[in-house]
Length: 201
Image 1 (tube, rainbow, N blue to C red):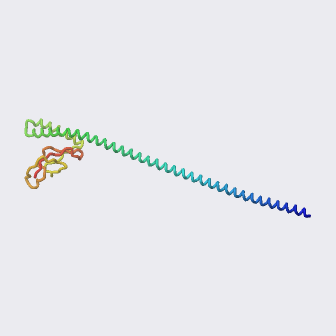
Image 2 (cartoon, one colour):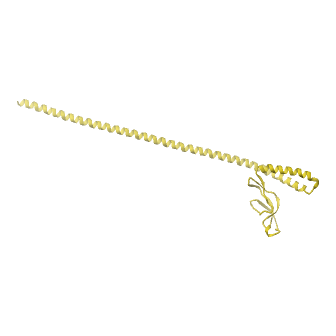
């Protein structure tokens, strides 16, 4: 009877020990599963962060490329405008130089007209010179040439060059141009030759 009691006690202890081991195993499995879930969540979060980081980097690269494109386009437009301006300045400079060389010819034609006015025998000759003079001035005026008005005008340092002075006939003639020695000209509103004048004082 005492032997059977020992047998059943051992059997009961073994069963309790197995149950405890089984419970421990289940608890360990749950811990392992929880750890795996945590690792999976961390991996997913890391992957999302990486994707966001790559997207931000691509956006930054696109913004930088757009900025470079705008700068390049702006430099190209500025270069085009500068080249057009320089070309126009070169053309204007060439026109100015040629017209300056032709101004003495105009002066000579006007002197010839003046000297022929009081000689009836030179009327036909003077008429021919006048036609050439007018045609010549017409061509140059199309290029922007314009004579500066002087006689009777107030002396203007921006337009006139005083070569001499003379007593003014009246007070209202003071500081006015009395005579024009050499005609001045403007080319497209810019003075290319000052009028040489005598000023009343």
